[in-house]
Length: 166
Image (cartoon, rainbow, N blue to C red; front, side):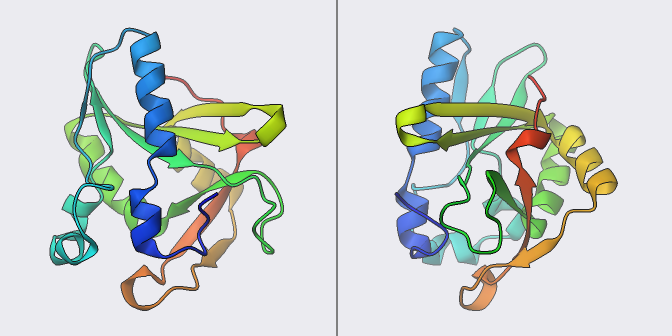
């Protein structure tokens, strides 16, 4: 299983959560288009782009009105010494970029957790819902232990706090 400790290149190639999102869209008969960059271009090209562009949400979904969907893989907590609870990591810089995209079209998150034998859990939440959580819950900030620009701060948002829909 890919974790935050793996190389960024390997993490960008991991599309498990996106594959799960596509299955969901098809099951719900939702039209969608892949618009994000994950797994499609190399790290050097990604890093040469403006931060706003590299943080474009993964999918455009043609609901009424159309929305953006950012797909994340949640952590079960077993791999993180600091956060031993099911959560997803939201980089602060990405959150700021998502607010830019949210002005064009509402941004939603779809987070998948793989609990092995217990199955897969999917949670959804709007950017505004996440923003309210950040304001009201006062989550602790953590920092990735990566080199250079990938050494970013993030919030570990507990799975139990997510109950939004789209």
